[in-house]
Image (cartoon, rainbow, N blue to C red):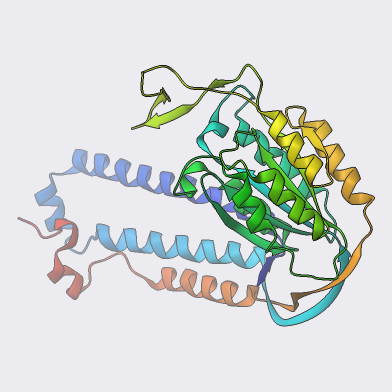
Length: 345
């Protein structure tokens, strides 16, 4: 495990394209000026050891040295010991519907993007609580096992997309069954399951399964996204946006089915929340988690982080010194290779 002490220094890498642009501009100016002075054949005779390759090599070495120095300023730190620490919090699992109906744009920018926004903001409000993520469509898949690493949770969340599941549909029941395997702490008294969906359930057994989660002390909350008026489902066809149609050629309109989501929440001893009002949905989840009784649990994390900047600084300085002693004239073995067609004709 690693940490970056001063990641702000990565902005210095933006200087590299500017340096290379200046270097290439200088080469272009030199070539143009040399043509005014003499023809290429004559110039090769006058300066036989001139090498474009060696000049380019010096620039590459200098760039690598500069990059390593910047990484040294960032100061990566490596965790050298894994220790067990005690934390207190609740376990929260998000089951996110990634079926193609979630791409509908009746909620801006889309139902799926709104879902990811809500979950990301809820994660930002968490303390020592553990979080897990499930994605589902025709089947349910574990996107992230339950963890205290909230940064990882947000990273995996950002990549959630319908293309990540092999079968389409909306099987909420599959997500509920998978969620039951996430809570690995038998002593945890506060277990929350948030189902984020438009409610188009094709499994028809979600409410019955939710009653099973209730027996395991899992409180199920649902967040509905979409409108009752609904909207078409956009499909990317070779870079062009088309809209899903049925077998008769009519445009498919997907609508919010909040009745299904309300039934699931009621069966799971939870509540239904209107996700279209994202601020209210986030505030509801935050208040719920903050006021919940926190249970102490053990987790492992890296400690004893040691500085690694010296390796990057040392190698960077070595490359810069090498660049100073690296001459721009041709070497014999390079001349034999005739890179860049440097031999005179």
